[in-house]
Amino acid sequence: MNRKIPNDGFILYLALIALSLTATALIILTRLCNAMGADTRRMALEASHRNMTASAMIWLTRNKDNLVDTASLQPLSLDASAFEQAKGSIIVSYEDTPEGSAQISIEIQCINNNFKINRKTRFPAASMNIKPLSIRYYSGDSSTK
Image 1 (tube, rainbow, N blue to C red):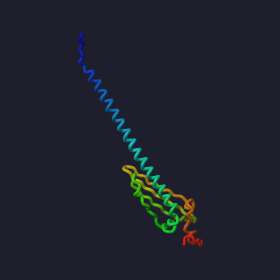
Image 2 (cartoon, rainbow, N blue to C red):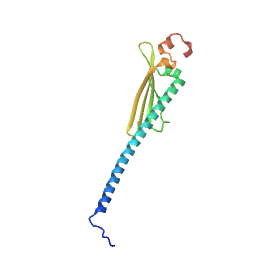
Image 3 (cartoon, helix red, strand yellow):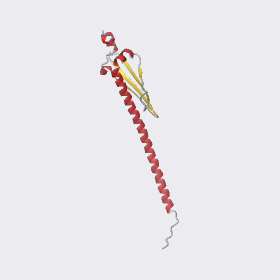
Image 4 (cartoon, rainbow, N blue to C red):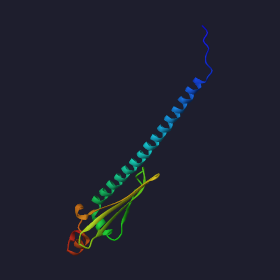
């Protein structure tokens, strides 16, 4: 038996359909991988931000007396060069409020490729057992002299 193979291009159509489906699948996978990469970079930047915040809080607990004595008028810029995931800055400031209480603010800015996080956190100085300047300097407290 001698069968004749039809020359109407059916196999060519199947090859073109398989090629277009493969190209479509590759385009979809590429977009998904790019989105996953962007999410990974964003999550790494948020992790760097959390690490910088934790570093600032540790610095505050260790240097709370220095903060009150020397930095009441100007913000302090802490070294953030050890964080390799993102470039950033950490600024800690101590502010007296008119009510006689005090606030500590931590401003952190992280930059990584196309992503940027800039957040400022404020909390009462009493939560860190830091007395306001007006009480420490003018009440006769001799622990700071």
